[in-house]
Length: 425
Image 1 (cartoon, rainbow, N blue to C red):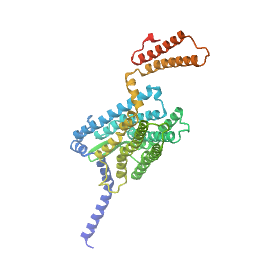
Image 2: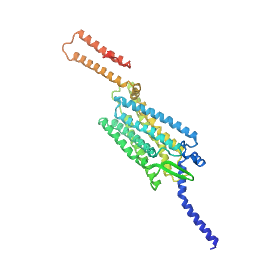
Image 3: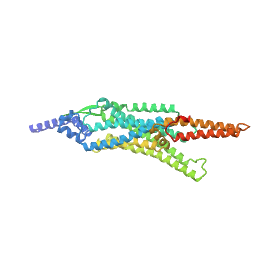
Image 4: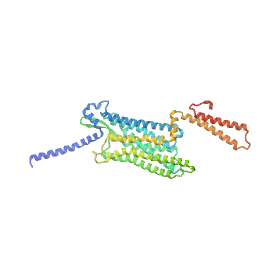
């Protein structure tokens, strides 16, 4: 073996050793590039002195403006609709039913999602460096998963409650106290299941050439890829697959029961048509609930499965554009649920205007008092007519008629006015 061959062999060996030493750096670089858009990289490597600038935004302003506008409209619509749902249910005592309490629970979880997680996610994307502190970084994914778990479990509880009421009408319904216990268990379980996302999401520093970047990112123990896959499978199963299966099976049985049900007391063709239309509306609503839950959350869950499990990372990798499209579709379910469960409910719509006017409690209180007086007068009159042998004189009967007419006219007059008039007492 010549001296040149020996020298060439040493160079090859040193090259292989150097390549092995650079593999961790290349992996870190690939991970950083997958989490950072091109505009941010241009900003970093063209002018690294701006990394400590207070306005640490990347230069892709048109895309960021579109992102802020689209999510701003969605957040505003979801906030307004869910706030109205909460106000109507809380301020009207007759709306304090088990189903409405579950709806209130879901509205609160939707508000947490749109007011806490969405702004933090947008901030993480727009700002190339995380400057909001460690606490908000831990809260970023934790708030998302906690609210999503509450949303899924509450939908499941509503489906099981309707399944029990419609298929087993003679069985006792759950009471309000039992409903509160179920809601407490839902929140406790949701906060517990979301703990891994709060622990493994933290502020980390990434050194790329001359840039020292602080990012809020997932940081799983070694082997990080296996941990991330396990957490993804666990989350999708408990948040999406299992609730969707239970909801679909429960509503399939309910739809089958409604379709085969024969309504007693229906004697005319008009009554039969009314009952058929009501049945169709109920079936459409139940089907819409399942479809909305499945369609809205499928893209985001499918995105996580492909990015975490697909072997070819050059085909399926982190893309901020794809992620926020899937995220926008998922968050839109917070608005659609309010429309399906509340705005399409005639009882809910009838209580919306009095609640907004701020006079529902006063009106309900005095209307109930006049209604009680009217019922007492009717009962008193029936007792006089049917329980005594000697009827009263015609003068007393006319006086009683005038009393009933007076009380009834007061009630009608009170309904037509918003202000309380003391002369009616």
